[in-house]
Image (tube, one colour):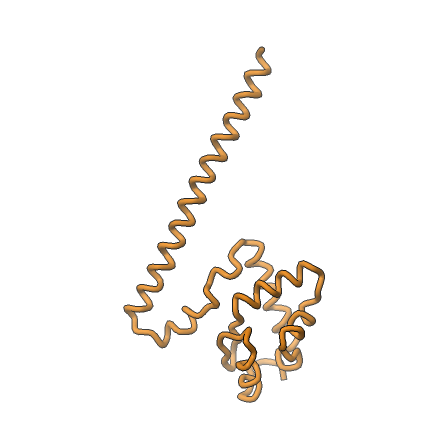
Length: 145
């Protein structure tokens, strides 16, 4: 248990957990809600294994390495500001089930959303540059008076 591929019984048990979006022999897709819960509790000092147990997961099924790697991925995503940006990875799980035109539409919506984020970040960056420039100019003016 908890090593390598999951068997049918383990997949059935994991699939009943509300924090699991999808499960196969090779992987488990956890909900964004659980990822956020994990990070909140982790930052409060709780150990990864305890967080999984408290969320109804059996560490014997998952295995310590799977828990460790999931936590590492989520901490990395959290640090990058991308934790929860993937809509529970549902799009990825269902792409293989959706007709290509629906997948393309969903991807286009995601691209549009990301382009809007980029535009806002560029505007914020330009505003911060202007503020910095004004601060530097003000300091330079006071030096020469």
